[in-house]
Image (cartoon, rainbow, N blue to C red; front, top):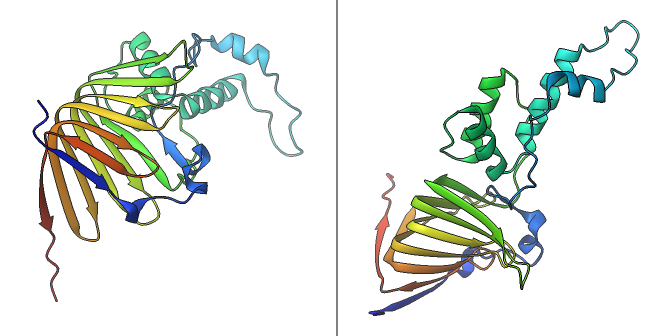
Length: 230
């Protein structure tokens, strides 16, 4: 039974129309990849596919080993979260953690250095914790979904003003096409900005990433204000 309905329209953190485009935000749990997993090719196959270019004057041509290492590093840095999870499982590595954790784990395994990460878009979404993940595309609408289960923690950060929104729940469904999230089971939503933290708890939550509109069902709220000296 729905005991209460708390609607939160967080206008202060709503991005502009241009910021609502996919290019203006970075989501770190991308859509399901193709069956091929990066890094699956053997070193010899990669070396044959990428023949070494002529070396500049005074510089030695890159070795096949160096080219393989460079290719592997780029594969790791560009792979989606789901691809990284699958890759780690195939190698018998721990597949838990965020996308960055998985990338660092693979880089350590292959003993390669990842390329520099470009500055993120205005709003980044990071999966901090999830025991299980599932990706699928709905046949009749073509909409792409990500389902996370078990101790789910997802953060949405505005890289311009530092506003941080965190969602904790038993399970969370992310509609990548509509850019909305639905969390169920002991949900806790936390908004931190300007030294003030608002926390909302309930049994379920609907959240729109672009507008920052959140609707809680059977929820309550509390506020903590950080005291500053002076």
